[in-house]
Length: 338
Image (tube, rainbow, N blue to C red):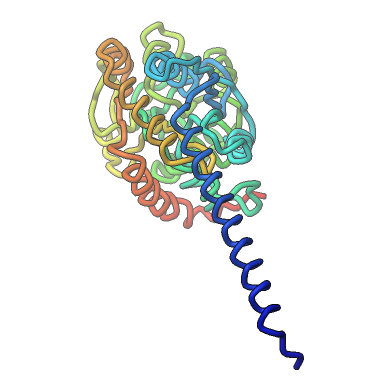
C-alpha cells in the first residue's frame, strides 16, 4: 500500500474540511430558504383539490371552507374538481404536487385509510400525503327514489327481496367509502343489490330522482333538502344521533341495526414533505374557519358537524385508527381492485 507524505495528508485534510464546510453551508442555506418560504407563506393562491364533481357534499363543504380560509391566509383559496377512480385521481395529483402547501387534497381521509386495503396498484402511498386537519363530519344516509313504494327499513328489506337482482344502489365509484358503506348495508340487511358507480353525487341524484336507480348512499347535508322537497326519500340515516333527520325517517340504530353507524369525514391533506410551519399555518386557518359562527350554523343546519383536529398530529392519530377500522370492515368482503 502506497503511503502519502505528511504534506499530502495535510492538503487532503484541508480539502475534506473545505468540502464539509461547503456541504454544511448548503444545508444551512436550504434550511434558511425553507424557513423564509414558510414565513412568506402564502404568497400566491391555494388550491383545494376535490375528488368529486361539483355539486356534491364534498364540493359544497370545500367551497365553504375555502371562502373562510382565504380571509385568514389573505390569499385566494380556490376549489378544483378532479373526479375519478374513487378519489385516486385527485389524491395522486396532490401527492405529486410541489411540497409547498399550495395544492391540497380536500375530501375523505379514506384515500389513505381505506384505499390501501382494496387497491393493489395505487399510484401513491398513504405516506405520500401529510395530514393537516379533519374538517367536518356528517352521517351517511340511504336515499331512495320518490317512486320507491317503501318508507321504512323493514319495508325496504321486504321490497328488495321481491326483486330478482335486489336493489340498484348508486355510489361515488367502486372502492370508494360510499361503495364500502353500501356493501356493509346490503350485508347487514341480508339483501341483494346491483352497485352502480358514478363519478359524483350530482349525476346519481338526477338518476335517483327520475327513478333510474332505487337508492343512493350520500351525505345527509345534500339528502335532506331533496327529501324535504319531495324529490327523493331518505330510507334511513347512519348517524348515531337524529340531528336534522326529518320526522318519520329512522336511523338504522332505531330500525334495529346498531352496527350501521357511519359518517362521511372531510379533511385536508398536503403533499408529504410540506414544511411543518406551512402545515401549521394551514391547520390554524382551518380551525379559524370552523369557528366562524355563521359557517357553523350553516353546517349544523344541514346536518354537518364541524370537527377540527386539535393538531396535525392529532389528525394523524385519527387516520391511523381509521385505517384499522376500514381494514376490519373490508377484509371479510374480499374486495381487491387493480
